[in-house]
Image 1 (cartoon, rainbow, N blue to C red):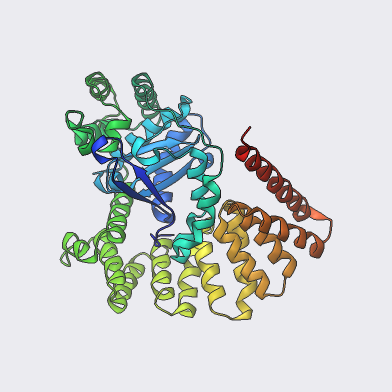
Image 2: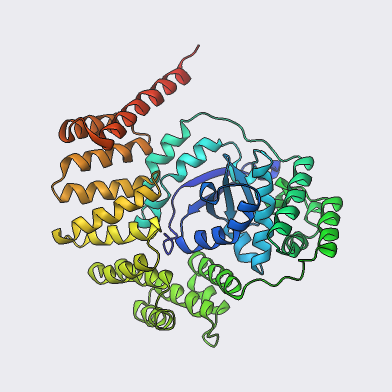
Length: 455
């Protein structure tokens, strides 16, 4: 959770241009409940208009200052933080999302050359399984096993964009926006932000231009739609405008040095997003007392805002006040109970108190978290710790089997699955899941052995 924008997985990516091939750029996958949920809420009507299940769409964030968004691996939409921060209103994000949804609905398998380069979709998505590990712990090593396991999966090249796919995605985006009674101005504004970048050499272009080739015909098509659509002047809901400003401010404050945040969001600016950004900057500085004073002021104004409570919990937890962090985290979960990231934060804080009385609640929160996000290896690891410290060795081994399977550590997964089976017996849904883990471990090992065969 970023309120935990730590390094999760770093991919070294060779750039496209020959002059840049000797250089490599680091991309960091990040997690944040507020940013992910805001983008998902913006996109849900679009997904529904496209006939897609909104819950099946994964929103994934890449810490990269360039303008880019792309889909890969089916129904996974990747956003560069640079695109979010640079966007000027919710409509621009929604316009880009409508276009990317057009690629999903059109069955296009899309790659961003700079973002995925030589890596396969499977490897990238496997590496993302460790996202909450780094996000909650702040330890890049927490996701290392997931990254190594993912790199051994089947290597399938992703398809590049074609101009015909781009045109089709634009056409579908206009239809989705009209169906939701929303304006397409945002997409046109985003195209205008990109400007004349196609005239620049590849090394100076934002990757969106290279992976989504802009043509005069495409821009003219969107402009014509905006001129004709009866929804082009439809205003965005005020709460969406505020939420957009908040996620921009939050991302900026966590990514940029605190001094830049304080210069951009000056003390004279008393808006919600400015005080939010300054609270993050002061916490990172660190000036924990000043940061807590700002976040307490925001909570006083918005006492039911889960993300303000979450940030306060994080501030306290990471400054050695773990027990004091419990109540803010509990408030965050109270107001947003279906957030896996918030429950992981609360569960971890409860474990770190070393108070046996809190272990049952920690296990309960983490159990809900893995139900909501079953591919979160760190949540399974924390759940194993909670069970283990509470004397539930069989359940601890089961959780470790899930954790190691996701991390690609098959011998360990198989060992703990067998141990859990012995301790828990041969009945119930957990026993059936243990059989699945053992079967998957055998399957993946056999696949790896085939890949290593010279024949």
